[in-house]
Picture 1: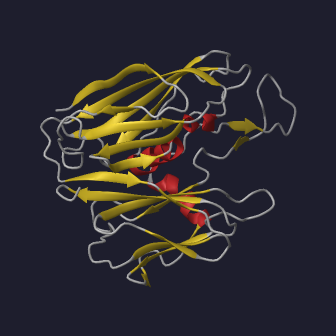
Picture 2 (picture 1 turned 90 degrees about the horizontal axis):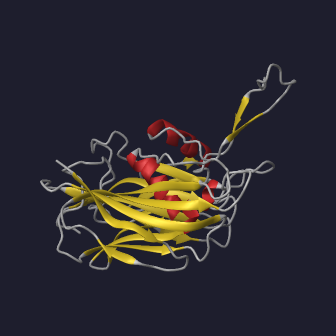
Picture 3 (picture 1 turned 120 degrees about the vertical axis):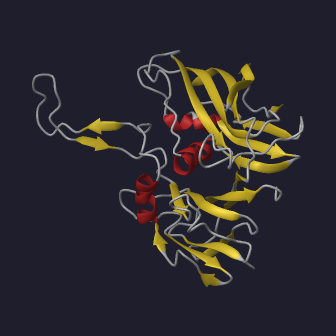
Length: 320
């Protein structure tokens, strides 16, 4: 049995503020964070990236320690890539003052509603949601927030999902290592890079990666940006429609129908990569770290620009 409840009912959002709210005490599968807002432009829909751009940082904190910590775009990416959850937004009409909404998922398990993998029960005030809103919103006004929770009152979880963000900006195109946490199992790592291949150059922030455990290559001896990016859709949710597409009219339009082929544009996750370990979600290939003295992702950049790394830790109850 699960209980779906409202935690924050239709609250006004103020840009630049960092409010927080106590979360329910029963075991939690996930949160739904829904933004309702007006489009402040005419003739064309909002640039979709400006919607997750409203969230500078969303955190779930247990006694002040991070369980979830990432920005709005990475939250969207992790929902799609880790939990197969893609929100269907409302009313993307392009009309001025159109009433729109979008829901973000905050998961505590990779499989939603799982009584085995969810956040355990807590005392009131121990588990807190905190959102830091962007200093300003682009083409968006009259923003309101609703937060809803999926509780599992009868659950006896064995583990939960922890996802927090690390960031680094190199000063050259030499390889460098980013540390991964040691102690918990890691099911996936989500990466984001500032630069991706462009029209005239293949120079991404993350050109190649290697996973290194105990000072030796481990599982991923080498993988390229292009392959990692293109395999994301095969392993997880199908790509969404947020970056739109165009029709190239190679010949005249006849009888009111375009005759050119559909030209898909970049997906909203164009800058993200997924490094999966527990690919079948059965624990066979999950990355164990309890026997590691050191654990890193070695990144080879083609352009010296910022990256973000989000390890998806599967934390055993009692180890939080």
